[in-house]
Image 1 (spheres, rainbow, N blue to C red):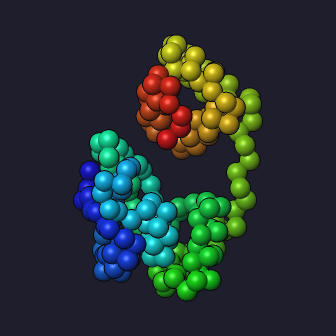
Image 2 (image 1 turned 60 degrees about the horizontal axis):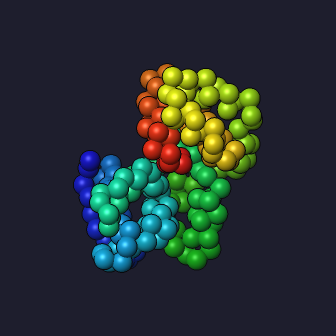
Length: 186
């Protein structure tokens, strides 16, 4: 795991991004699960990241009190979620967006990724694809079938969105591990 950093508030992270956004390949921010450690909030971190053309990603638990979330520069092909487009628009309105964040938005607009419609829900017949893949992992399959339809769709989308077969295999392993623990999607 790359560098882990604790910021006590959003201004500290903003200053770090100002100094490092163009030279860092990413950073793991430490967040408090409870109020034992003073850290900025994940939502605040996301807003600051968007201001500099960065995005949040993976989350990993460190212990009972802390977790880390990875923040990296956006790649030229990264997708803009509805939530992030709304946040970015609000940040522009409030005058918080930097030229770097605006450049990331313009790049997304120029390649048609800014106004992409919200993804349609996974149809029921595609859920069958994941059910077939879970054959042999009895506990995982049993737990999957007991989960709400929205959760089954989320797992299925995660599995089917993999572009490469090796990625799909790794995702299936993660899905099985989580389902065997009766956990929802990541």
